[in-house]
Length: 301
Length: 325
View 1: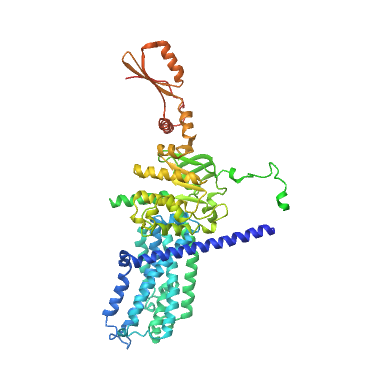
View 2: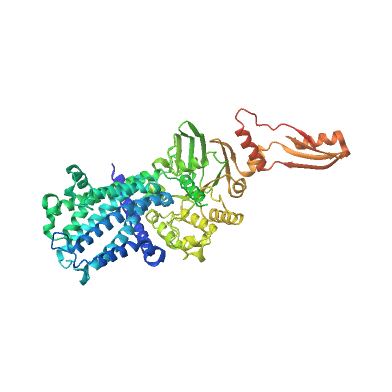
């Protein structure tokens, strides 16, 4: 390569980096605008508020300060709170991302992104902002109840907050990654039901409903391959007393493994998702969106 | 200052010295096959900067397939395609930034405000700005161009159908494209929205040096907007020229009407002047109500398409026929 070609090549790489950054900024901006709709528009607020409100009500109604987990001296409120945090981050993060992307494919947003330079990257960035925002809103609502003096939860320790912070951040990112991959693989919003069955199946083997140690060993291994189990383990480690690690695999909270698996899923998903989404975008065109619009309109009539 | 006194490029050595002379679109023997069905059977054409080219043809002629291949949205089966000097099948993001596509929006971005959405979309194009082409378009200027200034703060779902279509155009051109694609842009428009849209395309072509490729099945629209019309039928281009040229070149026959002794006659004549001379030589003063009219582009278009659909092999000449009514 001559010097001149080298200079031009370097210039192209710089230009490409600049364009990628511009697309990510545009995505962040788009995500922020859509998030602000949730807080300024009544209809949107009604869409996202029921889950956090319901969770808070359940936490308050169950007399968390006095009811103990059967056979222990430890209050049931903590397990409830942990379960709700895990459900919120996993269902809203994973399914929310997947459904958002299938809707984007149906309504032409994905086609528009495809017609825009680096648009797919911007679309994905924007969706990450919107969904993390709504998930974090619920998390904050739940934790505020946890902090309330009448709840009787042990949220006062710094180590609890530290663990919660990194587990929720990494866990959410991993869930969004899996959701983005699922959303790119499923052909339309109507196959969302199939996807939800898959997600609930995954919950079944991830120790969300029952301790994973009660499952057959091969299912335990399957469960541990997915990030949901590790998200749950991390949240429980932050909120439950240390001796409850006894019911977990290896009688330990396994923080190092948790961080590792969640990080691998988060990074792998964020690398693979744009590729898959671009591949999914190849199948949409003006005519296919127009055909879907036509079908939707005739259905409406 | 030595650089300025460099040697002149030798003729024949520099390929396409002036990039403005290079075709914006160059399609050769483009073929598309789905399973066993041939949708495009060897489409070839070129288009130059500043030209408004209209693909005109009935539904199923292959217009959309052609456009989607040029947009890089579909992979062709065979043939050579170059758009702005690049094969669309391998067009990167920088290529994408030079192209605009008007898509019919539907229910996406309903909660966004007009200006908000255009500004966000425009920011993707800023890194591709160059001294020759500043990108994106100034947003307020763009909104004024499409006539949405008083609606700039409105939410998109509050726009009327016509306003929304004008926003679609603004979204298509926000990156100041060198080439703009429009596929059936006025399908489902009422007459007023259609006229507004045509005015907008005229405003656009007056200001910008961009090339426009528009597909439509509406002859009237093609006549109003096109510098050049390609008529497509059955996956091939069957005619190519300006509206005027097409009407002239293909309507070999003119219609001659007259009455004689209270009877009305209609005759399709290839040489109307000669026919009328002969008519007067034979019947002289008894010829009344004489009327000669050349077939309109519409007649020509309908005849061409009908003839194409009735199968190849039939001659294109119009036969003489006399009708009494």
